Amino acid sequence: MRPLVVDLGRDYRGGQHQALLLLRGLVARGHAPELITLCDSLLAHRATESGIIVHGVNAGCRRPAAVVLIRRLVRKKQVDIVHANEPHALTSAWLARAQRSVPVIVSRRIALPLSTNSFSLTRYRAAARIVAVSQFVAKSVVASGLAADCVDVIYDGVDIPAVISQADRDRARKQFSISRESFCIGNVAAFVKEKGHELLVTAFAKLLPQFPKCVLLLPGEGPEKNKLQELVRRLGLEAVVKFPGFVQDVDSVYAATDLFVFSSHEEPLGSSLLAAMAHGLPVVAFARGGVPEAPRRNGARKHIVAFFSGSYGGCNASTLRTTHRHSLNLAKACPNSFGKIAEICHSERSEKSLLNFCRQKEGFLAPLGMTELAHCF
Image 1 (cartoon, rainbow, N blue to C red):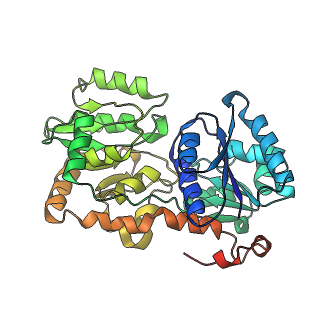
Image 2 (tube, rainbow, N blue to C red):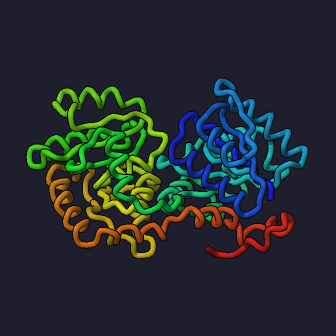
Image 3 (cartoon, helix red, strand yellow):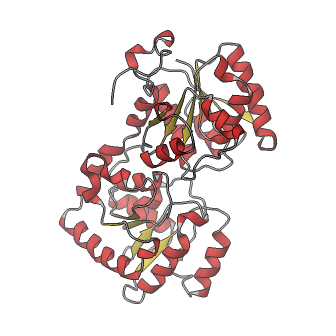
């Protein structure tokens, strides 16, 4: 099969990483995927390193340029299916009229409902299937007026990392200037309002007097970063709140972390939450949006240290204080038990699901010679 994955996102975030995992998984299964993305983007570089054919477009004209490329590749019969990984990609595929020649799949990983204007809905209705990253997102899509039988849920996947060794931990701690004795609370998210960094920093400030060896590790970039750094200065936390910026090797963040706090107050699913679980970390998360679906799969919820279904303000200093003690006790009692959760979120499952999303629902699998892939995962 020759899938064409299109992602025109300007940043490298969870959705772009899922596109990369999908591309690698398709290659591993003998398919020949190609990618349209921004020139010189991190996704373009990483896909190229993985042996993927990459068609680059300039950021200033990303949608028109993508339209031209999609139309050309489809007309030349170089692709069998188009996967739009985000809304700009869907717009380009629709304007290229790709849906008239090949099936178009679109991923939906946004917590907000679809816009109900005719242009937005027409784009999504032209897709052969809409892939939502959680039941929460699927419900919002259907509530926007799209047919439920056109929506499938395929959860994000993660690569299963190797067990973090003491050497890995020491290297990561040295990289971020964190001592071996410190208790590191970590978070991985872009600095945007919905990720809840302000609440996390405020709660951390109240926790610190009782646990002075705690540090807070906040990698990433985003429009709220300067505001958050100002809050840290105002609270006098410069020495214990780390802002390392964009970290290319994000595994090092998990290696340095003792407790992962997922402070997002409205999340479609939470790929960094899944990654933290796969790394064997105890986590604190809110039961908001699609987040509750991640730990509920295969009975994994018992691995969550603190899981809140109340108001968003429920993550306070008392919460972190209790969780800090709980996570230390669990780490001493069963240091390897958390790693078992990795089995529920392997990226292979997402790759297989995406390949087989239309099983028993659409008739175009057989013409593409994909009937051998029509099996459940």
